[in-house]
Length: 139
Image 1 (cartoon, rainbow, N blue to C red):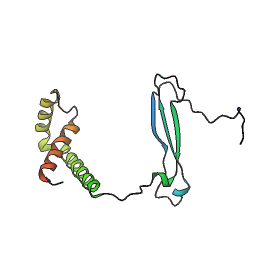
Image 2: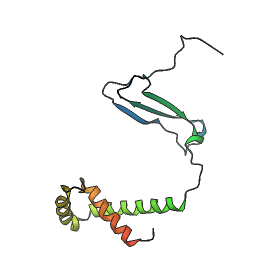
Image 3: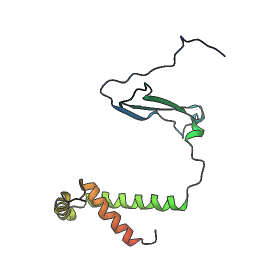
Image 4: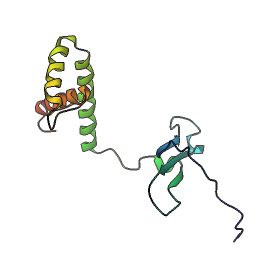
């Protein structure tokens, strides 16, 4: 066993403007023929009132640790299909000039209510999601 207190691990210092960092610094290109040789670097940093100096972490992941090991379930497929259909309906509705005036008026009327949607996209998403759920009751 090697014991040398002068050896330290690499250290990253974030600029003071960064309160948090969370996510991949680089990703593995799964379509690349060299995907098995690549590494993913994940970093987390939080600025929190703590006595511990360990508020930053870096993780190295390989292809095996980011590849799904279980098959996609039927429930996941249903959720993905719903999301895809609602997202497409929202995009279509945003660009439909025949509905824009009515949608704007309805959005503004509900925006300041307690449970009102604060953005036009979230408002349209709620309408289209409800319409999808009504058209597909068993899903």
